[in-house]
Length: 393
Image 1 (cartoon, rainbow, N blue to C red):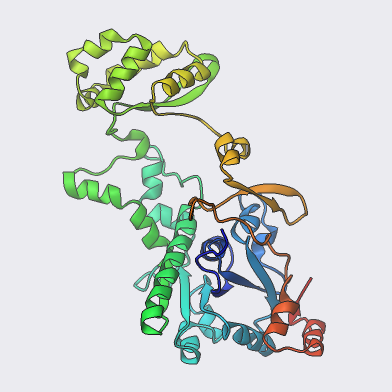
Image 2 (tube, one colour):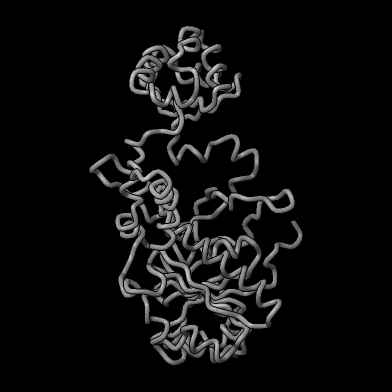
């Protein structure tokens, strides 16, 4: 791909953790020049352990890094000079933080009416917008943890769904604002929030109640819309997800395994009949399939075009043949210098996956280059470095 859609767009982001960096990652992967403004000590996600250890290299690829001390007037001055060259500013700090620095939309839009400003928060403006929120907080208060866990046992989803999707909606809003600016010549503020994102995720369950008058049950205890749509434990303790969601698939399934008695059973004639019969039908299927290995079941389902899936751990995806053969994983250098691969955006443009142009930046890797670009002489940069107002590699 010679030219990416957002080539020529400059983004200056004041972000940390996941939500804001995800917005910048999406824009960067689509071709924007994204400049990450970090404190001189570095984004805290550079040093996280455990479940946060992969945050920085994943969400900060294709970006440049400049390290500024925004507590100092000279740091703010450098930030403002950089913002003057930008199309988009993105931030995800606590409400009021950017205003105290004079870097909020109200202040910056007076300097440049074409500026697009993306603000990522816990809540959109309203009674709760003062609250500090995290992904798990809004999952609990927004119905997602209730739906994910077993009845009486709320459980957060297994990834940072609201942070990531909230950042994606920030990017979608930024691109929409760019399109509108092309028509009006004016920028605007885009706001994205964790809580409202979570509500959007559970909207299908809200609307289920609106349509049926019955509350949605947590997913592990729900009444499935499909008769066969389950994880089966099979030979040698293996597990596999198997599905037969239509009457056509039910016939293929019964034919493939010789279950003629089940196919002709009048109680199992339609999908809805089989849904109502799940309580006694599924134990029969589990018993009959238990003697097969997961590999054997995979072969039968593959041959007959039936839906199935292995139960895969995240680390096993590095070796997924589909991802490897389709270019879904790109070479990436981890902060400690080790080589790895990383999943790309899950889309294609003109038959190609937008790839990596820049490795995750070292702290302040582009500080000197960017300051020089906005008019700082070498001696002025050296002075800022000596006083700890900027950091560079």
